[in-house]
Length: 369
Image 1 (cartoon, rainbow, N blue to C red):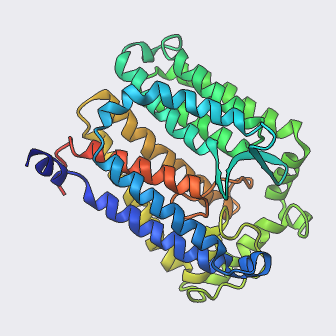
Image 2 (spheres, rainbow, N blue to C red):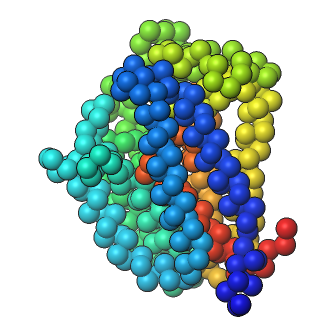
């Protein structure tokens, strides 16, 4: 009876919103990918079947996380750290690592692929939460926060050599954000932020294809059939949507015009099909999840719960904002998925698991709805 009473206090609205978003994502993945899936794999349901499988696994892990006491995650944290680092190294092992588009970011397990960098974000959140909860005062200084910085940098190093700059920047941003929330003094925060910005600039300058992407962002019309092509097709899709869209499943850009329509640029197809008004309500749903996460974090009763909740919410928010900025041409193109929406099994399983953890944290907050 006590367990039942406790679970009634959980933020069930968060779970409803998460499942709704995942279902919407699968629907738009089918719309965005059915032509390319049919022409490439002779199966218009190829991508959506993989996504539904990811959602089903994600529902199981989310349900488990909902009823798994979040405080016990602190004990599991060292094992998760080791597993994360090992998996990130395995992507470079021939026969295990899977290379695609010139990058080694996946591990092949039978017909299933795993992207360890998605797990790395969750691992960093739990390690930071564990360390801060055990050393709340130390994290106010740069020396005290060094373990989080070193682990974050290790993850960034292993991810950037894949290479995967987008998730590297995402992990670095998450690390800095969590240090700020942990109470790191502003002067130290700035000391971290400046080298991070310089590091990003150096990464862009040393790789010609990244410079090309930057040029495409600044002037996509300079090379409309080359580096500027994807951004222009994304803008065409959003522009074609107008106020109310061209209708569900009626996108034209998905017909081999917009690359990665089912993954990184799925928001463009959504905008084309449902228009500005549809996107407004879509972002309300995304914003609602972020709002509930921040509310859970603000009402958390212990440091571990607060840092865990804020970390999960922030990574969801960071990826949402970055993806939206990319598809609208507001920042240079980068391959960062839209959480719970873009095609990708590892991403949706990890995010749904994290939302289960967030729900579990909410069971101890006595939230009022």
